Image (tube, rainbow, N blue to C red; front, side, top):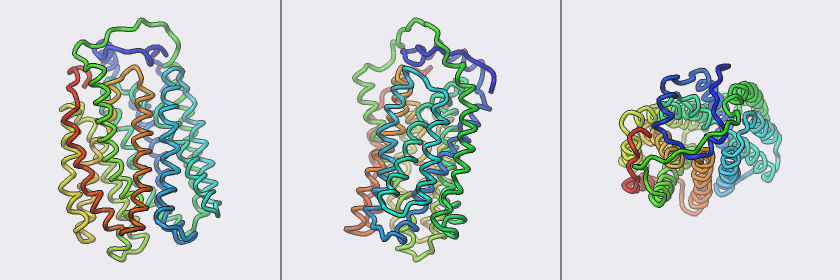
Length: 415
């Protein structure tokens, strides 16, 4: 992690020709230690974040919350991250902050402590917002670090990065079932030790990152002549946001309400339902890992087509399946639908390479924040209808994948 590769600050903010820089990066190869470190940090970060949704049944019973209030907790967490991630990304495009990751993780640290001691609904919302703030600071810069350490294998690096986050998300329900359910809300404070470990690791990664951003004047170069026009880029970015929204809203609906759906329809215990949620989220982690390398090999547009539309038959069948069939379908859905995340994000980064941090912030923040807003709307819908009706509606979300027809073809070397 001590080997330095100097990348100027201007290089991070000016348009670049990928064909000019990729051979050098590929020759050096991926910095596996850095990728492992940032992926593990993503694992710790998202493990802590997923605790919020995993303790919903406890909060609901303890404070007599309805589904709309549960949705508002999700909104408080995701909306904070949604607003700030593009801002953080835009700022770090101009002036990279190697130690911001460790500082942002401190917000998650205090958010967990506050959530463990919260006894009022407003305090719970504030705690969720603090954890969201940590997410807002973490994702844009960590995505940039993953790309710098990729050695030209951008999809692979993004998948390794996403794998940590997806696996961390899947661990939340298991840890909640083993620790929080038996020992109560106060046991959430124990997870602050995970945040402290993440702070130490991210500070160390910041020391590797700092030499990468030494200021050095470089001349801007021409954009590839086969690159899509600015108008097509704008349309493509809107399509990618819509695709990620459809994927994230579906995953958010399962993350926030799958436990209640299983309890309501099949009468299983809270701990059993959390294990089923873990199975779905673990399948998401598997799909997230394989999606990026497949995009490197076959093209990101093909992976996007297959991963979103391919999940549609299974999402349509889920509301009508039995308990064990639901588990099998959730695994298939998780693997297929999550394989698109890396390809969507890398596709967007390649469309606007001179605004890497901002684009990463938009896709990690705004699209995921819209998913949080959708979760709040779904909670309101569940209060007025039923949780089963919500899943019948959400089953059609992957059909939005048809919008992929409007994505442009990128020059070969950018894939």
